[in-house]
Length: 417
Ligand code: NIG
Ligand code: FE
Image (cartoon, rainbow, N blue to C red; front, side, top):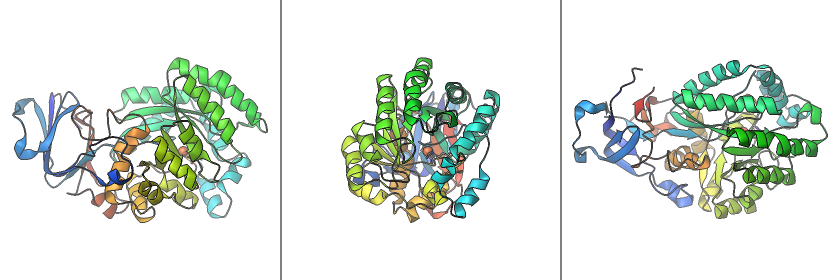
C-alpha cells in the first residue's frame, strides 16, 4: 500500500454508507438503527471526519488535496472494534483443542496445570522482541479483516515482570501499527503454580505489587479478572477490581463463562465498562447490566470452540442491554480472530439481526473499550476509521458466511490495507 500524504480523504458513491451514529452504547431497540446513507459520501481532514452525507450534497473541496476513494458498489462501515482479545502470547495449544473434543473439560485441563498455565510458561520464556513480532503479525491479520481498534489483555505472565512485558509490547505496537491497541491488565487470569492453593495470597500480590507497578507505568487502561469457579471468586474479583479502580483503571470482567457465579451482577455493581462471555449469566445479572449501562460483550466463537451453550444475546437485547461482539482471540479457548465467523455465529446461533451485529462490532465495541467518543461510528469529529466491503450491503457480512469480504481498510484517514 502506498500511503498518500493528502490532507483530505474523500469517499464517494458508497452503495451504502453505514454510520452507526447515535448515543453510545446502543442498547436494546436502538441496536436496530444503523443510519444507512445510500449513495453515501464522507470527507475527512487530517484523519478526522468533517462531513458525512449524500454524494450529490458534498461540499466544495480542492480535489488536488484529496485522496479520493470511489466506493461504487461497496458498503462502507466504521472500522471494526475487536473489544476482547488476548493477542500477546507465546506458544500454541493445538493438542488441547482435540483433548476437549475427546471430552476433557477446559477447566480440568487448567486444573491439571495445562491450559492458560501452558501459555504462561511459553510467554515467560519469550523475549519482548519475539512477543512483539508475533503481536505485529496478528495485528496485520486482524487489520485485513477490517479491525481498526483492538483490545488486548495481559495475563500470560502472572508475575510482575512478564505482565509488564506483555503490556509494554502492546504499548509499542499501538504506537507503531495502524491498528489501535487498548491495553488491559489481566494478572488475575489464573493462579500461577507457585501460588497453587493460595489464591488469596496471589490476590494480595496482584493488589500490593503488580497493580501499583502497572498503574505507575501507565501501560493499561483496563483491569480484567477471570471470575470463574475454581479460579477467582466473586469476592476476590471484587477486591482486585476495586483496587484497580482506585488506581484509575477501568473495570472489565470475564463473567459467568462456564459456571453461573454472579459475575454479571458483580460487573454491574462495580460499574464495569463491560462484562464478557456471559454464557451462564442469570436473569438478574442480565437485567443488572442493562440498568448499570455495562456493555455485555459476547464472544460466540468461544462457545463454538468450547462447545458450550451460547450466551442469551436475544434476551439481553430485548431487555434493553447493550451488546458488543468480539473474538476473544487467544491460544486456548478460541484460537481465531475471524470477524466473519463471529458475524455468522451471531446471526445463526444468537439470533441477532444484521443491524444488531454491525452495531455490536462497531459502536458498541468502541463503548466496551471506552473509546466511543473517538471511534466506532462515522460521525463528524470522530476518527476516519473505515472498512469497505466487496459488496454493496452490510448484509453480505453475514450472508457470505465465514468469508472475509473486506476490500479496503482506512485508518485515521489513510488507506492502510
Ligand atoms: O476468555 N477464560 C479465560 N480466558 C480466556 C482463555 C484464555 C486461554 O485459554 O488461554 C477466555 O476464554
Ligand atoms: Fe477472554
